[in-house]
Amino acid sequence: AAVEKGNYRHFMQKEIFEQPTVVAQTLGSYLRQADNSVALPQFDFDISTIRRVTIVACGTSYYAGLVAKYWFEQFARVPVDIDVASEFRYREPVLEDGGLALFISQSGETADTLAALRHCKEAGQTIAVVVNVPTSSMAREADLLLPTHAGPEIGVASTKAFTCQLAVLAALAAHMAVKKGLMNREEESEVVAHLLEAPASLNAALDHDEDIAAMAHLIAPARDVLYLGRGPDYPLALEGALKLKEISYIHAEGYAAGEMKHGPIALIDDQVPVVVLAPSGPLFEKTVSNMEEVRARGGQVVLISDAEGLAEAGEGCIATIEMPKVHPLIAPLVYAIPVQLLAYHVACVKGTDVDQPRNLAKSVTVE
Ligand code: G6P
Image (tube, rainbow, N blue to C red; front, side):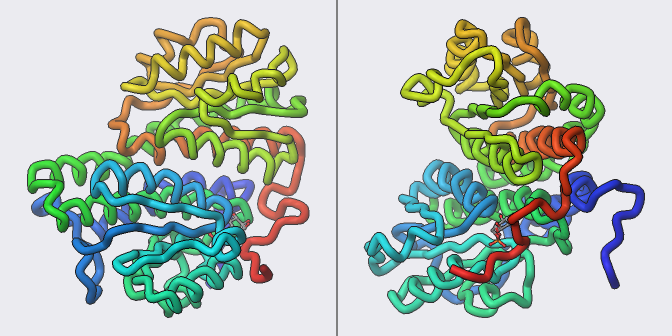
């Protein structure tokens, strides 16, 4: 049956609001609630012997991979290489025995990612695939098929596939840690409990839709927007900038908050909105000091944080967006919501074709 928009104005908006449901569905197929453990689909290699993970993807799926790199290294202590698919083969990557090559794709058909998969297969890597279309080429060629259960994604700019990819990747990293003996039962059940909090936190984030709609006019006239984040929230800054570029046609750049002083700070003036993603927690103070550097140069800061973070650093910002207080593990999922909504509402103010932005395709099947 054709997918309908229902009461939503755009498919993208509908898909943003579906996230609590589809992330819960996806988590439900990877986590056993009875004993708070991780359960992957069947596969026939020994995951505890994996010595290196090579992640390859494009676009938003690549940013999910960048978040996952933090998790694989933190939990499973396995080194991770990550590339955009169009660059991967041409740098003559070193693919040693015992390597897991992990491909992330909504469609499972992106030409560059598929070509990289085949290259890794020929080089003897074990192939894992996180994919939203279970009948896709990538799904068929995987040794370990890890489906996301986002349902059909119609909007060209990816939203719900991304948060579902993050859910699967967190489960995979935790599972690998368990199998390698680096995560005990108690730690595993804590991780699972945090992941299971994600759907409610996504809902709480969506409650701020109207606040975000109300401030979109502050961003819409801008020519350039910067997004800053740190640690696992740095890829979210990249994703926020990508979403804004894709659907509002405003030039945007995502930067690691601490790297801004090595260049982009030269761009800061009172015409450049700077969106700062800073959940309170261990990295908060450092990000806030980078934010102060922006403000000292007249930069117009939009701070996205929880109540605690906003109380500490919200003053003097042109706008703030409040997120629920969440465990750092699920912050990348939760902070996806405000960056998606911000791009969406700015695009609505500008009157662009949100679901089918110019020059972009849902699935890119040429290299
Ligand atoms: C296109 C889409 C993006 C998507 C990227 C990767 O550029 O417009 O939204 O992130 O392809 O697609 P995939 O299906 O491989 O995740």
